[in-house]
Image 1 (cartoon, rainbow, N blue to C red):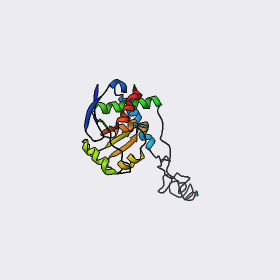
Image 2 (image 1 turned 135 degrees about the vertical axis):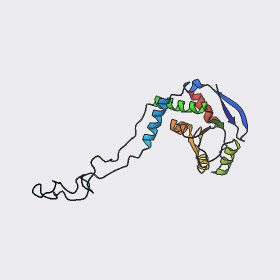
Image 3 (image 1 turned 180 degrees about the vertical axis):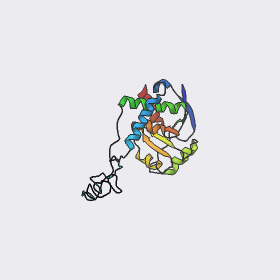
Image 4 (image 1 turned 90 degrees about the vertical axis):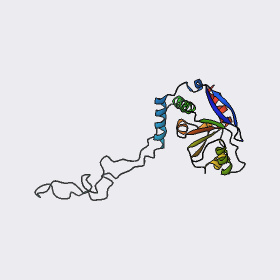
Length: 209
């Protein structure tokens, strides 16, 4: 059983929340987690590298000089790949690097990522109050109250999309905000501490039961 520290909306410590490892697959599936991370990184690649090939380089297709009786090596046109300024032979062209894993595999990878954070004591449940209008100062002050330093990589998970809280937190260096339905293994692994709102954490546990 893993004990997850919890804080109320005032930043005061509350009773730790017990979490069974069985809810998240009982073990960290490292190979699957790695495969999922590679997929997310591949999907983020733009794939826009491009070079000019022989047919795209500016220049004439005329043979530079006749084949024989010049005393020089035989040669083609000025766009030949062996000449300076010629076209590339196997250079890159824009392509799509993205691919996808099965939904069950991505779900299992997410569980492994969360379990790894739980085992490393890098998960906190904290109810950071959402300002009525976008304000960064109260969110930054709350993080300091519960012992987290703004500037270090942090992730705050809300139960649902909250544009006001997102606007309040986006100016805090190192802090990311994501709604529980959008949570994935890549987002969980990157930060040093993952902060769940109480509603988000309860919903996460309820989904796994």
